[in-house]
Length: 173
Image (cartoon, rainbow, N blue to C red):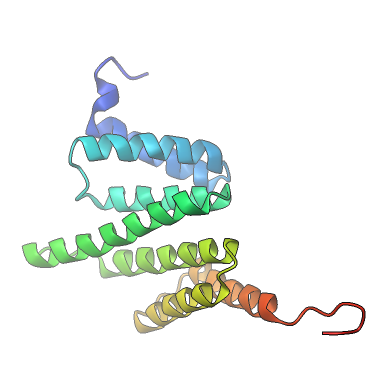
């Protein structure tokens, strides 16, 4: 249990973020989203947004919101995660620090996939296809071999292709 005053600290926010990510990974999107909103809020209040865990928290928040079918909120969280991911790369480069490239690229591809899922929910299939293709190019260019990412890209492309096939009703297209 957190003591009074510790609920508004960076260590508390990091623990919340870890808990929220676990909840999302375990399929408890509602609980994960609620926990991650609190974690992100505390990180923002303490100007801890430069930390890569902040970008990951935004990404998982977006995933949770996609899972609970809140596309507008998910889109905002995913856009913020993508901006943060790109900002982390720029900050690391400017400081001469090496941010693990595979982390940044994998996170960016994962964000693009979730953004594509949001477009699918909104029946914006051409936009979704473009995002899946962009994630695919990114994974090829950087040799991402994550089975989860590659499978998500292919599944998304198939869903988009199937959704654009003409519907046959009563023998007519």
